[in-house]
Image (tube, rainbow, N blue to C red; front, top):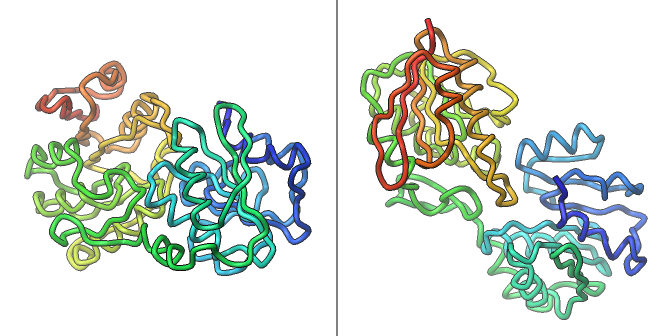
Length: 344
């Protein structure tokens, strides 16, 4: 699939309006794609916390890290900002802090994901920016920097995506992860219908900040261990914090992993609220279907899958082909709860 924002990010370099610095660059939310492979970009350091994108960059041979603790300064910082505005503003602030004197920040966003807002936000921190448009996207970059144009705003925005308590302090979450400031309706509905007789080893696919795993452990005394699979490391780190007290009573493993590549063990129970959008907002029901197939592969004989999904999503055919028994437990608020039992 064409990555128009990534292509547009490198437009100023392709047109000769900007030159690549000798001392390399830092690339926040980096993604692999042909613009990175068309030319040599010596000294490029990528940061990516989403496992499928991280893996793609590693396979392509790029230097990539999965944390968000970079303290070194670079003469160029590239960004593909996320859609969530507090998270994006915090990332702009980090970029400014990681830019050496005389360096620049360059960012690109698609028009339908807030390009104009992103441009305005970067200009508030850095002063006037230059802009170019292509592919229904905008790329915008700062002048050579010597600190922020508004240091107080920089300090304020630096903390916008910090972890914080939600749901009366029961969980810690942060902007930018799925349903970050609430328990989403679908997951709450699945938790409500989880039967108390679920037992044995379990996996939570797409675990987010850990809500469904916490509910499973509270409702089902027979669960002896849970593996939490989550592709977004920022979410998985929160899940580890949120379930720290449960580790004293059950075995928990926190797996930064792309579920679509298969699971790492066999299980008696799998629960999931699978994603059906790609990171760039594209509808991807095939991801949910793959979650179901992977669950079937990983379940022990007579193992049980408990799934919540939007009512309209076409999962019935793969459920019927992969499982011995499938039943819809409930339909409410536009969602369906399904139990599927593995063939003996």
